[in-house]
Length: 387
Image (cartoon, rainbow, N blue to C red; front, side):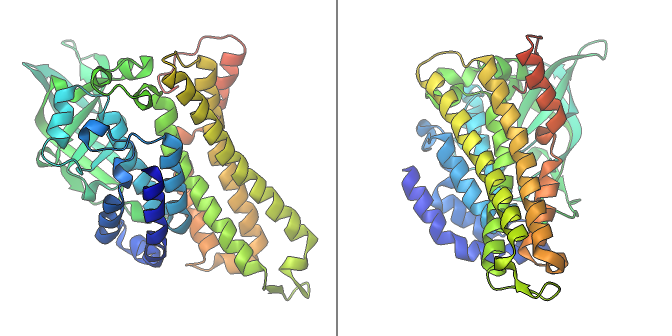
């Protein structure tokens, strides 16, 4: 089934590429693009089969994201983020899944995981209040997943939960006016004293230990992968696609371009050859490491074995390096393009802005995660939940 989705996406690429300017100008992915992606089955790739999903190999899902991001970075980003939420929702208690998918299995869900909301325990659940930023694609969604801190009786945090909230219980504030990934519509979510039943919460402790209530019904190996790997690759894969699209556009343009200053075609410049080679190698390395790590984690999950901490740490190491590699590649292409890369609307210019914007996501904090890997290599305790 993944092959059919991939074929459908290939057919959509020309129209999505043509809408890239509009996507950026309107600051959100066009509604017809979202409808086409939904019809192609992309948002169901990581969804449980019992809810009409494909339970696809995650590498296949990220391949689709990479292809989409190569023609429109914002579309690739939103597809990646909205497309991974069915995977996480499958980890929630069954009743939460029924609330979201029971009436419409094509329901889309956005998110904002930073725990900027507060939960106060009440009978049967929690009272929730807060404001969350960076909820990509929120305008296209009927539900949202939010990070929130549970406050104890003495006003101290006692737990960190992800909560599922329906569209009727929150408002979207249009604040998204940025230099990169402008078309992601990553606006704010605002909630004021809304009741959240206990079954619509997921403890981050359970997520980190890979022991979640939804696994009782959703038994596929896919749902035994670490959140730290799946979510972080959701953030880095669009950058790989953006870099890939920038590379392809650069090669096509530079084959015929003449540098007046040097009196030669760029295609004949040995220094240009070196920059292109370096850029291509960085992009390849980013994708190949992603494939390798996901494939290895899936093998453990299929066998019903615990995924070693060493592999989980390596996945995060390669994920942040993948984001870094893509920025390095685009910077090389930017330099190789000369002054023309400064013009608005140039594919290299947009790629540079979009990838730079994506790189500042918390999941792409390079030094933090490289240091975490180093701790593990030296046998020091690693307790971060995003592994």
